[in-house]
Length: 101
Image (cartoon, rainbow, N blue to C red; front, side):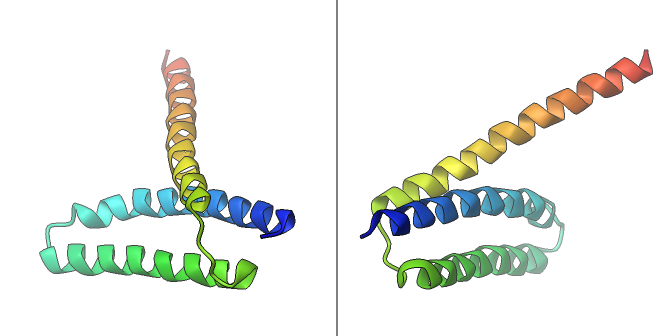
């Protein structure tokens, strides 16, 4: 695989990991809904559509050839988004506390 394809694929996987983490965070409200049908359908739609979008993106970039390092980039993007969102939440909470005083 050419270097430019590897870089494009890694970048896409990393950014998709971030997007997937955001979608799962938003899906968190659906998961804790009281109706079991809504929980099941919401989770299947979010995860299923995310997988379809990911592989369509891979198909566009490099004919959907999947390599193990793409999974690493996807997981890295997922966890990096979690760390960044916790950091941003901490900053926002500090500012709210500052204004309350």
